[in-house]
Image (cartoon, rainbow, N blue to C red; front, top):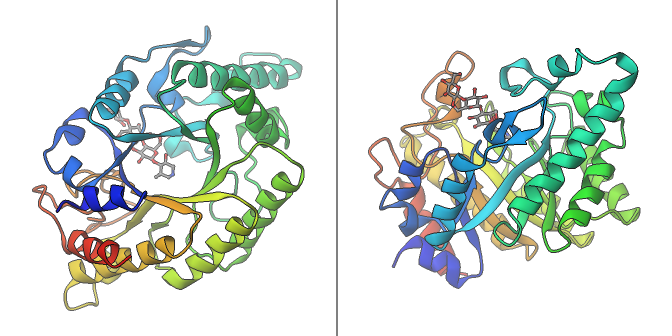
Length: 331
Ligand code: G3I
C-alpha cells in the first residue's frame, strides 16, 4: 500500500515543502505525503502586495492551500513572524522599509505591522490551517544560542516573541502555535539555549503548543539518537514536536557505497526517533523532489549534489521511501 496510507493509519503526518501547484499535482505526491507546507507562499513575501498600505493578495497562497485541502492534505502554516537577518532571504526588507520613518516611530510602526499581520493571516486561514509556525528562527543561525537581533528584536524589542504568541492566540484560539528553529546539532549550546528559551515561555504561561525542529543537514549530520533525547525534553514540557524541514544533502553520504541508500537510512533513523516519542507528530521534508531545491538555487553556497528529497529528478521514489514504509509497518 502507499506510504501515505500507512502514515495516516498511524495518526502521523508526512509532508513536503511545496513551491508550485505542479508539484502538488504530481501523481506521486498523494501516494507518499499526507501534509503540505507551502514553501514560500504563506510568508510575507508570498502574500504582501503593498507594504505601505499593508495590503494583501492571497491569490497564489489560496490556490495552493485550497488545492491541498481539496486533495485531503493537512496544511502547515509557515511562517508568520520571520525576521531573517541575512540579506539573502530578506523579502521584503523591513529594515529598509522602516528607514523612511523617523527613528522614534519605528518601534510602534513595526509592532503594529507585526500584530496586524498575525491577525490578518489567522483570520484569513481560520478553519483551514490549524498548525502555524508563528515565530520562525529566533536564534542566531551561526551563534552559540543568542537570540538573533533581527528587525523585530531591534524595533519591537526582545519581547517580540511573546507579543507574537499572544496575538496569535487572540486571533484564533483554536490553532496550534509553534516556534520553529533550525539546528545542526541537538546537544550543543545553541540547542540548550533554545530549550531554555522555550521552557521559560512555557513557565510564564505563554500560549505555545509545540516546537518545530527544522533538521536541515547542510554541512554535517547529527546522530539521530541525540534528536530523540532532545525531543523528549520538550515532551516533558507538555509540547508537541514536529520535524519541519528535514533534509540531508547527498554529498554528506558521499563516502557510502550507495549514497542514496545511506541517505534513506539516515531519514529512516530520524523517523524512528520521532515515532518513538509520543509528542512527535510529523515529519516534513523541505522540498518535494530533487529537480528543485533552495540549495540548488544557492549552488555557490551549497555545491551539488544536494538531492535531499524522497523523489529524484524524474519524480521516481528513492530508497528512503521503501525504508520509511518498512519502519512504519513495524510500529
Ligand atoms: O519567485 C521568485 C522569482 O520570481 C524570481 O525570479 C527569483 C529571483 O531571485 O526569486 C524567486 O523567489 C525566491 C524564492 O525563494 C523561490 O525560489 C526568493 O527570492 C527567495 O528569497 C526564496 O527563498 C526561500 C527562503 O526560505 C526565503 O524565504 C527558499 O525558497 C526557501 O526554501 C527558504 O526556506 C527556509 C524556511 O522558510 C525557514 N528555514 C530555512 C529554509 C531554508 O532556507
